Image (cartoon, rainbow, N blue to C red; front, side):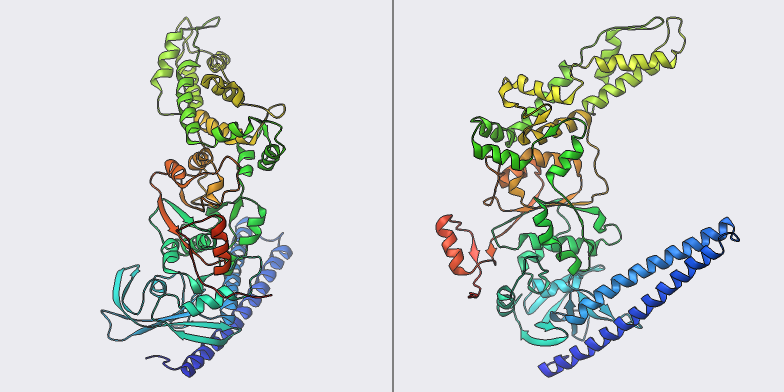
Length: 557
């Protein structure tokens, strides 16, 4: 067996560490040379600007751009190698494939590292297919999904390492997934206020989430301390690795509750070699959608109003607007608006007459599009096919008048007045209460946006190919309906339905699944955060019989 003894493991580590340091020096030299080349090329362009023709100028600019791109890739590689210099790998799995005579040893690290000449892998990225053996199987029969298909075989050895500053702290032989001793050491280690990567201690149920490639919507219901946010971020890192040709960090968006959360998670993806990804709050999305339409109070202003208790009916308004029935009522209302709010009349100009029947027939023949687009298309068709009384084509000025006249036939051109009519239609006008001139309560923000999308149509954000939603319990069904319309991409939604901070507007898992009926749900029930003493105390306050506390050592003061 390769490196059977601990002494052999230490010698192997020294060899790998030396190779990494050599690779790092070579990369530093390349970066220095690349920087000098770019400076010289720019200087050449500046000095010879007057003598170069357009083709030469363009060719030199392309060369500089290519050099910069190469330099950026080399700098990214330097960052990965620098990370490995301190901790080259954390695990090893020896695997004998059924079609091979020899056992292959795979060392698993945060990043991959290979010999420059042969490109033989010395360290495998934790996201690589073969690394799933380390997370998913005990010693014995196992398999992994390679690009060419399923590879069956047997795991003969599993080891876990603690390496810091290139020095081996310990090595543990493990027949099981992640050895309890390793997990205990990691859980008891000093932590700061930033989330860290967990690649050395990913559990089997967590790995299943991270490597899930099939679910269009994946909902992670996790108890407090189950690592759901960290697992979701590692899932993003895995998908960026797996689909590197079609998915980049600029294609991923996080919906997060606040900037404190942003700071908390900021360290994870860069540690894993990925760029930070875009992050917005629901209020920032709302500001974009309602710009020029109305203002609204913030969520915190809504909570303050609840605490002050000046409006006894505010809780009732929030509860209704946080329920599934609101979406159903809005859908019914939009259909009512399409049927009854287009008040058709004849159009009569000096040389043109258009009957209301002609307009109505055209409107009713158009289906499968939102109300406003339906009106616009009706106006375009009627103005385009109309003739003068003499059978001539109408002048552009008359065409514009016809379009304007048809659009004015819609009773509620203002989105805000249409939203007000919604509550009149329900027979509940008191459900809408403005906090100022054209200023909504926060509970009305996403119902109004949902109505806007239904009436005007959504402009899907095609650049976003994966959406990550954290603290799922704090968003209402109508907010999820808005996200579904704006982001028709794959989604990872995570949270704990028992941890909502939203008074009267928390959302249950079944309610979220009503919006995403095809979603796959995975539950994380093990809590790694607290000691048994704290977990038992918390259970006396609010019991959760499904929570499984993981024993971890007490760190005294």
